[in-house]
Image (cartoon, rainbow, N blue to C red; front, side, top):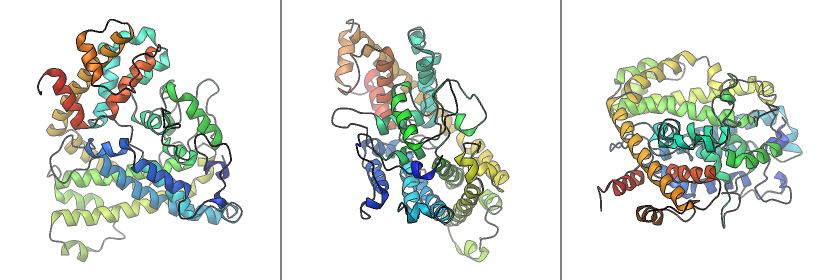
Length: 446
């Protein structure tokens, strides 16, 4: 792969090539990507979607929106620092083509801002709940009517693939989705493959999948424009865009450190653990007198968190540059932080978070409720949509459909399209809206 192609400013529907040197520096194309994501209704709904503690009423806990903003800030720093080093290594990118270090930061920031935009309500349990509906629930009846890859899309419903759908799906008045640059779409695509074969190798790009069958054409168009390397002759699978490693690193840094911070502020993890585990990462930058001068737990933990994030940003930049050739050749097969000298400390922090936060009674109880909500919504909506298509809709089905958006595909002859449309609608619901719809269906609220 080469940076000239990887930094493509092309957008869906463009007929002429966009040249970096011809860009308006006051409204740069890559910065427009950030604006388009942040003003989208799908991004706004993240303010009421679970990050770690589902439906928490405390002030401390991050939502998907605050998490995404923080990942974007870290991603911008990573991109700018890598961009500066890349321009020193490949000066023609700047001298001949006009690219600046901030371009890399803008691409990574926009992709990082959108990285969770496809996640359904109730966190990762929401993804699992949708998958379980088709794998073991009422949706299992559709298996024989779908291709293997279509069925796998539903059984392993993937927020990353759903995010690509949100960013690229055309509809009336919105051709090409929100029309991001292909460079930003490439950086967004952490898993550039289809749902089958599942985990064909241990390569990080094969961990999950990045697009539904309905977006296969759009995905291949982006991959071809960017010059991504093909990794399979039989299935759609490509090497990652190099900047996707930075988006992933920004996410890894934030959820590792900030989820840990949330757990401490909530009292789920003892404050002493913060100093014990984070000090191993920040031992070269911490100033004990500054730490002990802080009077509140939140300020002390916040100080440690800021230093830890800064250290890991520097570490990720160094690892990226050390392995740039392997990354461009598609041979770098793990996350950047898997090569970190702090890998053991990171694993220790994640282990504590799993035991004390992710498996806490509050989280488990709310995830159980989330399963029930999503299962009920999917069962009700798929029945209504399919009965309508088959002209067997009951009065109840017709009432249900009146409450759903007109964009829902009730008349599409493709069963996969109808089921995908329902999943897409449910995935866009905030936690509160999903619960409200559930209560209406159950007759709990009027």
